[in-house]
Image (cartoon, rainbow, N blue to C red; front, side, top):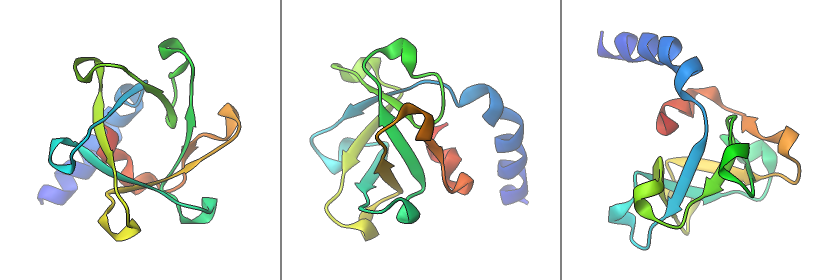
Amino acid sequence: MRTVFLLLTMILIAPFSLKAQKIFCVEYESQADLKVFVVEYESQCDLKVYIVDYESEADEDGLWYFVKYVSQADKKIYFVEYESQADLKIYMVKYKSQAGWKKSEKQYLLL
């Protein structure tokens, strides 16, 4: 029952809340909201990420803007050494238009 409620909540809220993602990289795993691993191939990822230069450009899923201070961040992430440690696997794309979810079931991680 809880899973159904969570899924319904995601479906209703997701279109409105999946906007800019301001990201801060923390020094220690225990400080992170999310553990991230960068995969080598696009087929292995959950999310294709493009790093934007300005906060105002980060208006879609997968467009990340790295902030200087933790207080400015929507999410605090920690890059793990091994894929098995990650909550989210990302692939860095070369073009802004390529960014977005490959596996939508992980969207709740960035809500």
